[in-house]
Image (cartoon, rainbow, N blue to C red; front, top):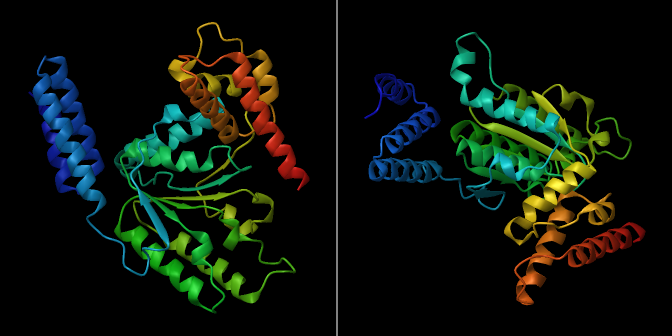
Length: 322
């Protein structure tokens, strides 16, 4: 059975309205029961937690006005899906650790990191990071469709942002503002219009006043055009880069999985993959796997992998010329 400390922790988290802490302790109880050989009970506890998380996702439905502005999902991604430098993984792990132990920080008058700006080239893992944060914490991921938020009518964009931040306060989750530079551009830019300056000012006010328990993640491919006032509104700013050779190797090995040959030489493939993004390398691996399946082969050959990487590299060069 559960330990006395686990029982007390379950009671405390329930009455202090901390569902994530409750779920965490419940899963610890399940693990304890499994170690005692009570596999059936452990399975039932895990199933109850999964069902409760699923129901919690739908407790506060989005308003009809926001349905077409926000994509809702329940990611399953975990930290292992991210192939980044040790320094980057450490910073993401710190966000997770602070969130999971936020009660400990609150006792000392401190708050956990929950407002993040992710900057870097397309396909380097920014959107995946938001999915991993949601997946690791068992939270829904709300992706804000910035192209639908921004309109040509005066005052309408700011009104929509206000609605979004009202939901951020009411419904706990990870909120991803992708392509954030659509509203976060430098206010002094000569080609900017007055309305967009007002929109940015509104966002700055909303994010500064926000005291919710949600994670707010803004992602941009163009950090150099962002207004400098934005950077100090975020608890953390992560800069993403194209993968280094060691990261390319790990990414290929992870992506190929059971389709990777035991003695697959990756040296020449890595050279081809340099300057490609994480997403492009992953897609090349997927293409190689599909080709192998259709050819009734159980593993991906080095020749096939290099071919798919070269196709991605050629497509990238063609798009740059265009």
